[in-house]
Amino acid sequence: MHIKPRVLNLKNRRGIEEELEKIGVSREGKRILSQKANLYLIKLEGIPSQAANLLKQEMLSVSADAAIKKEVASFGVSKSDVLLIGTEAHYNKVIPKLRRQPFSLSHLSCELEQILKNIKRERFILSLGDKQLDLAKKVAIMGILNLTPDSFYDGGRYTQEKKALVRIEEMVCQGADLIDVGGESTRPGATKVGTEEELRRIIPIIGKIKELFEIPVSVDTYKAQIAQEAIEAGADMINDISGLRFDSELKQVVARYKVPLVLMHIRGTPGDMQNNPYYDSLLGEIISYLRESIVIAKEAGIDEERIVIDPGIGFGKSARHNLEIIDKLSELKSLGRPILIGVSRKSFIGNVLNLPLQERLEGSLAATCLAVTQGARIVRTHDVKETRRAIDLTQAIINS
Image (cartoon, rainbow, N blue to C red; front, side, top):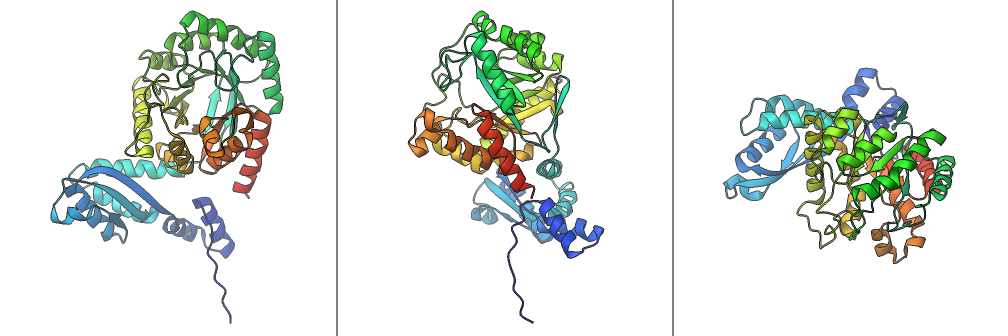
């Protein structure tokens, strides 16, 4: 007999279970083996040396492992980052053991348990008014409608109501699942807009959308007053670039009206965010920021099931940072919330390809499709038709 081995490319638990099914493994066997086949690398930062040492011992005790700084063994450092290396089965064994340990490891055990649940979660239902988006079945397209004279790509195109309505109808026909309306540009260095002017730009259009189209409306604002009046005019969701950091009253408005909320990461403000942005741990700092935003939202009474997260491509990031975020986007799954991504026509694409705004469609689609393979469930875009087609094919490949 001549045996011909091959290495399988099984990216998730579903793929592993499908392969076990083909082999003919029993139901209980599938459950046990799928836990052994999926390796999870979990990063912990700034752990006291005693805790890091104990973590390594406990991971080794269940035949897993943990990478720690070499000086920890000789107590030569006070803290160390830790990389836990184990399968789901390993973590299921080590978590109960950690509950009995000191140095906050009992708290860590709860965090690990929640993270494992979060990263396996695939189904998210987003309720927007009287519509529900099943984000497991189809990645949602958020069509951009900038009612501003100075937005980086389409500034000035849709400031007239007639042109805006034509554009909305076009996006609806092309496959948009919701429309994101903005009355103030947040591009780097953009001029701030007064409350009255911002309301003048967006409120009539929100009313017209609700009157003429059956599509949910998101409003791109970080201001409590804008959010409140937009919701009262018919808006179904608030898209906050600050992650509840710019206006302390916004969280109460969102909680009171029970609408979904997008929490985005930003470093600095639109006025200074691109002044040499620097991170010690890019994804670590983004996840920490978003985790804190989720806590702020929940403490204000916002239902966690109404929260969407966004890493904030281009908001306080260099071109290299943006590429890394897209490549490692799946790390945000540990927060257990649907991920929104907005790469459309942004400067990092022009930076990499040396292309002007008008020629960044292909780059936008490439980045978007990769983000979808990494777990993005909502995509914010200027180019609805092309993005819808690209994502539909990407999902067909993922689900094949």
